[in-house]
Image 1 (cartoon, one colour):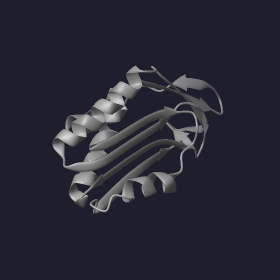
Image 2 (cartoon, one colour):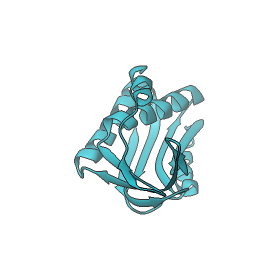
Image 3 (cartoon, helix red, strand yellow):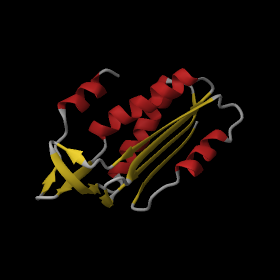
Image 4 (cartoon, helix red, strand yellow):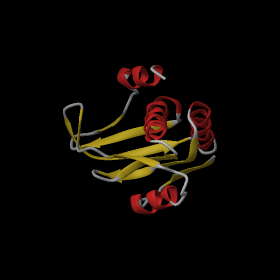
Length: 149
């Protein structure tokens, strides 16, 4: 299996990432997910996010998620991109792409990676609202989603 992990400030091209995953003729399914900065959270208007990470450890955690997905499902390719730094509303934060022979494995692996990433990868989010800044705590719903795997 081919897996690639990137933690970066630069934006990414969904079209380019999809094309890279889809070029394998043995991949009958490509599933992608893109997470974006929302404009509303906890009842407040959001104007942006600042994301921090632990360099080295973050990439290792994301690579471990790729390995876990490969152990569970027959995958050809996995790609995870997570952005850090200052991001405005509407900006892309995270990309997860999975290619496999069949759709079931791709869908399940993509969902597993996103559910696990939310609780296992060392990222910290500071939300900028119209009134203040605040660090975002992990949510119980994220932990519950990760537990189902």
